[in-house]
Image (cartoon, rainbow, N blue to C red; front, side, top):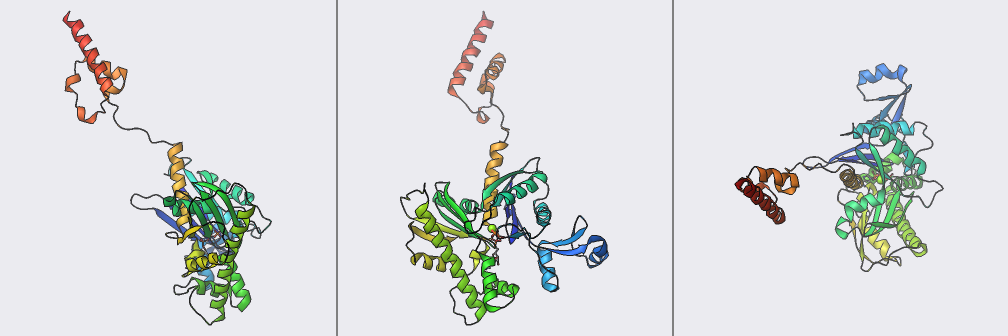
Length: 389
Ligand SMILES: Nc1ncnc2c1ncn2[C@@H]1O[C@H](COP(=O)(O)OP(=O)(O)OP(=O)(O)O)[C@@H](O)[C@H]1O
Ligand SMILES: [Mg+2]
């Protein structure tokens, strides 16, 4: 078995192998604090809103919180993570994340089932490290009865998007809080980093430029018809396009700069693919802008193509799942259930020989080793002749 979980600033997504297809579950990584449990219990029960009680407080979690906040404009939607990491401003962040992860994962399918969880690479533009965040997520998954194993976000994307390229190329995952990058060569990560500029950054700055509420900006940005390469004359659309271009340019410039100063960067013998994923890459025209910005710089790696991974929002969780399945196979190899052919052991050979039954064995379901047959025939002959005497 094995399970993958992508714990992101905007969404937490789990992936499990099903009989015919993968089971993917998503929850927004958000909550509303509705006050002291004792005070609101009756109201919550009457309105049939799903809630979680953590200590004395009552919370509405995940997509329910998002919908509730949209309906009741006064409710403040809070987020347990900010810029890719646990939000230091939310004292209950880890408890909220534990509740959401617990709901998504359910019970392990067996004791200590492997759960591969996604963490960001070290950010290069802020003085924050990923260790604390990593340790908390690790502990939560362990407490839920799983064996936790971490994977970097852009590497998980590589397992989905660069599998046909021998895991060689560039992966860029653009989420809500962060953009994660990995440069891979034959499965090895030669350079990886993150920058805290992605979907939330676009929303925040488009809001600052226009004074339009952030929720409205996000809604325009995510609406199906919106495109980075169409012409608009409203301020909101123009601001979104402008900040999108800025974050894309920023990533390309950062890769170029780090490439120049990093050691151990391979010389790619031929042009490589750049694969993009994460919710922020889903906007129409995204790949066109990446290609356009690559043409504007002296990029140090020859790029053969820029592609969008299949199911960009779920690809990272799927990549984590594929790693979990491999880890499970390593740790819990499948028991061999096939019948052991009689000729494969000395005891088996003697047993067969003693019964003088070598000729009557149903040969079609036995793996026949000619050497072993010769050995068996010799023993049969020996036994026969000893009885003849
Ligand atoms: N159709 C869409 N067009 C543009 N942006 C979108 C679309 N759908 C979702 N997004 C944006 O994608 C982001 C969420 O993506 P994702 O779930 O990959 O992030 P995350 O993994 O939670 O965050 P991170 O990896 O940064 O911690 C949000 O900023 C959201 O506004
Ligand atoms: Mg992500």
